Image (tube, rainbow, N blue to C red):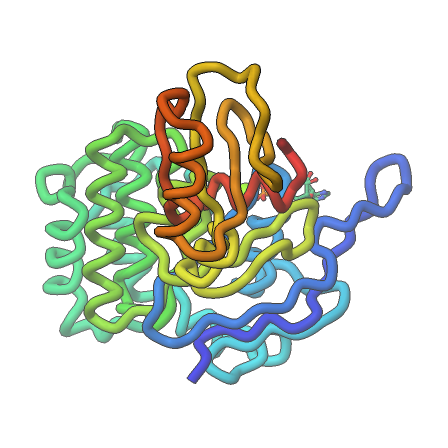
Length: 300
Ligand SMILES: Nc1ncnc2c1ncn2[C@@H]1O[C@H](COP(=O)(O)OP(=O)(O)O)[C@@H](O)[C@H]1O
Ligand SMILES: [Mg+2]
């Protein structure tokens, strides 16, 4: 079963100067139930716009979105209950205490009255906010407000949790806490869509990814397959002295050289024989997501 189907979705905005801005351009991808999926792209790529459409806040200009088979435009009230959303911008109800905020949202998301108190305590514990439960939201630090937003989003144990750049601008310890929580919720059966512009974060956390740039998908699939595709048969090496005659097919890539591999052992032996003591390092390894991204967006 697919938790999410995004099918040919486009979103255009009209700018104040009456120009049409295409924030999301014919995007299609799916997320399998039970996975942690990364939505990756630089600032302005269209990630938040896409998430607003998935959450039913914005309507696609064209295209369709389904959550667990249910259309988000025609059945918004149903899909909203299946979802937990942690928006990018911090929005908390400043005048209320943490407990009041959570009580209000547990009601809104239909947590039965008899279960609310226990569920709130559980979520406060998960987010390490127990000692702040009687504090007004306005008095929380930035990191605590972020945690309160996550607490709000998971109160009703959503089947599908979407986090829009939850780790942007947070300190290392909170980032690790968020990762641990995401992994645990996923292990308990929640499908996760995790938005980030940190590539190494996606490498760490996600099994599948959708890379977008300028509103368009530039790569989509299992992280392992994408890494494999881009590390395709390349041996990387560094030299001490660059003024040498090269073996055929050797290409420069940054400070390194690349050689298209046919058979690892033979090629390594040939390169070592050719460059000898001039070899500073030699390796064949999986491409980092960063390499993939830079290649695909032509930023190198
Ligand atoms: N409500 C809006 N009106 C006009 N333009 C918008 C609106 N929301 C987003 N955009 C534009 O759409 C593009 C994508 O933005 P966004 O989805 O926020 O990107 P990301 O979340 O990947 O950083 C940007 O150029 C942004 O300025
Ligand atoms: Mg965004």
